[in-house]
Image 1 (cartoon, rainbow, N blue to C red):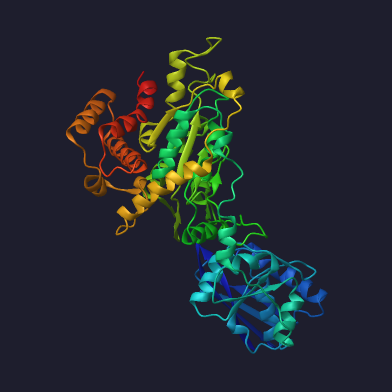
Image 2: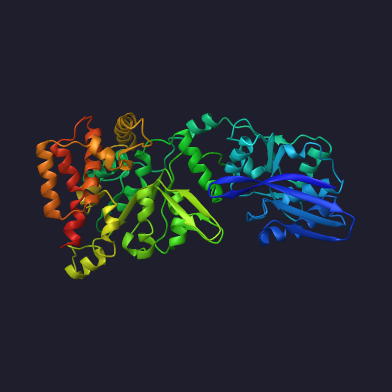
Length: 511
């Protein structure tokens, strides 16, 4: 008897429905699994055999042929255990299978029949709804994540016996329903850190506000203990809240990477990723034998924080050049190409010298040569892609001892939201959300300069030897500063402040 049952495979951040054809006949004995399965799927026969035996069923002693179509697409992982097991039982007439084709069935089996969670449930559920399936049957740990997809019945199972009884005896499975908008609104402002905890550093806070308002990349340069990491960790608290669309995009990526918690259904705050400096280039941008999203994709719609940036391997930093411009990363292999979104805000920090204290080194252990060699670990093209460079000064004792709290993240965020709303309205007819995303055409249209501003930026370009890309970045940052003030036009002092945020690299890198 031939039975068709449906599962799903992940490709990039989307899913593709897999038809699992199970044929059981009496012409011999054997277990044949075809359709480009990986080792985890090939080993499924042992897990399935033990699980069925422990719940009172068995794999029949007949010839079993299982085809996973499309046969030219590689399948991976143990997520097909449940669908293959149910298919074998239905094809061997051990259970009824009248409406089995109405459901996507996914789950990894333990030897006692209990179900283990799988990756990529959200894109699987979205694809199931698009293809008109009645419902999806999943391990209970995954169901909250899938339940955010409306117009799709999501059923939770803790054991394969529950799924067997659902089809064979009509016993109902637990149906999971979630009010997505309510859950989203409840946690959208849930932040562990606040800018009011940062003492002093008003200039750096201002630069952070400008960066958040326009989505600009920023690098903080200063001695150890000056608050660089502290400032960076508080950036998400002043960014605009995720829209429901952005939340779904971000959740899909984390779902594919297996980073979603069992109690989490939807990511409600912008991600903050802070990889260690020993990270490899594949781990940062994504890829591998079975491609997975890297840290830059996990930071999509959020913040990627690179602490002590010069300590990262140069090859790791250089692979970020293209994603910083294109806001996506393409992983190409001989058989396939995968695109992962990577629209993130880069926040980096570094010391000015190996000792960390140049030019105010109390022990004079750093020389200008050592400082320049340390700074040159970052290439010019990479620095050009970072819009704002800000020096973070040592915090004086009087500032540390001051009891008065600084400005709250909530207050800074209000100004950022106003600026973002101006940008959203300005670019409403374009596929652009904020100033950091605009290209040369939009710069020419929306960043007009008066004579004084033009003369100012011309002088800066000549004296600081800035590149054409740096020129564009200055105009983008100036446009954001003007938006924060509610100014329709870019004025000379907006340009002056934007140039100030570009001069730090030239001061150190060119001596």
